[in-house]
Length: 144
Image (cartoon, rainbow, N blue to C red; front, side, top):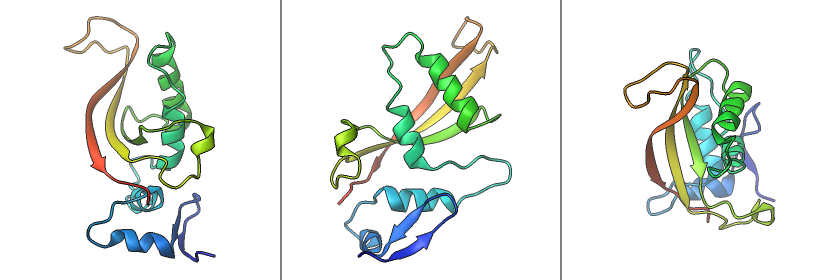
């Protein structure tokens, strides 16, 4: 059994085998990413488990007419009053059968998201809630 090196109150675990991924030439996995995000707490910011958000974001579909409202609801439920936040997303979700499967995903993105609650901005003349993804950065990570 792979011994746990670190365990947080928020179900973040780092195993001994994860430490090998910190050596040069390796890519990071979910456990190391979540550990890193848990080590960056700030009293003025809400810190979330990236694995939870990765799962939730994959349940939202851009073709769905309620996409923006579902994102707003997710934000209200999990992020609170923050209107500006980062999401770490694994975009290679392919179904329930791949959860917990080694090698299930290799493309990660860091999304900077702003929720605009009815405030008119320079790029939009519409009023009401809007989801704005301001930028996306590819993160070279791979589950070994």
